[in-house]
Length: 100
Image (cartoon, rainbow, N blue to C red; front, side):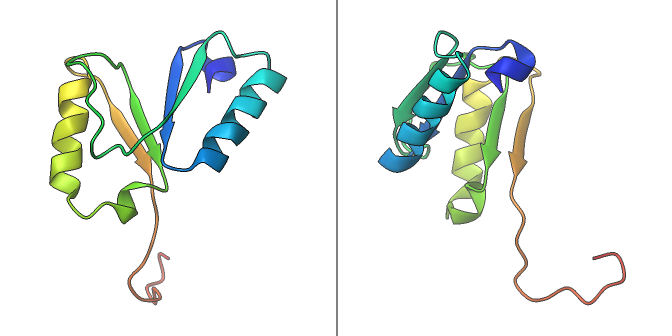
């Protein structure tokens, strides 16, 4: 993400293994000066108000029980009128609709 956008990126994951993998990838891509990683629970993370331009979450939100509280936390951490994005797909039952 840092290489594609030129942004400063801060990654958060509960998994030590995932953070270590992210560090290895950042180092291999020579992006270590624009990225940081933290082993933490996003539901307990206290980011300063307005400290992020974008919050991107992938394959996380479906595991969060109190989604409204998480989105309030995201909202506080985002600068005014900035986007939050998440990539999270799951189905409670197989989809039988033609659009699936």
